[in-house]
Length: 113
Length: 113
Image (tube, rainbow over all chains, first blue to last red; front, top):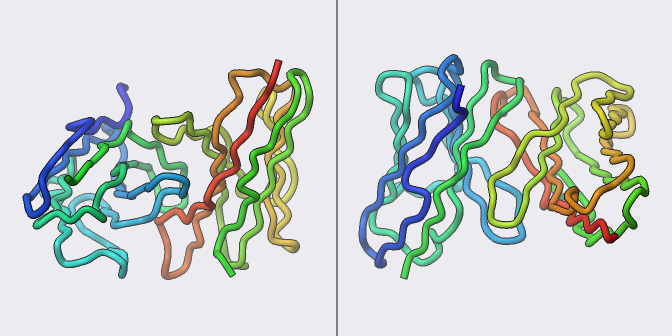
């Protein structure tokens, strides 16, 4: 088992561009989570999936953000019309159950110029 | 009041000493509790989890949970310079927040030789 993987690891984009990140969870995990972390803060929840169903989306998440997990395996997170405030580390995690341990991938660091 | 509170530190301990990290939380319905270690520029790494009141030991790490007082702590025995990192406390609140983790802002630990 290779753990949670994320791609790309780094992304630099210009303001107004769209970006898409991919996450591959641990193979037997049916739950997948997206978090965002800025410097000096703990990760902040964005959204999560159980299999292909998106069960919760943070109220802090603007409509520019969308996530999918079409076949219940990998997930994508898209940010449309990026803003400088979107610059952060985007973290993906997976777990076997709702209250169980979550394991994080290496993250995608987004820089919006 | 923040949902999860940690002293941001930095906490500095000499090599070989016991490092004590504390976390308090506001939601009495919280079900599961986690400690993550995060090195600078890296993603969080799960090091301990605890679900029941009392102590849980794993190697040099001991997690302590007191639901009545709403705190969880992490003790690191025989601290090593390689333990220098940010330690994140997280909880799964359950109920309508079932699944997502809520994090504190982290405590920076420095172990000096």
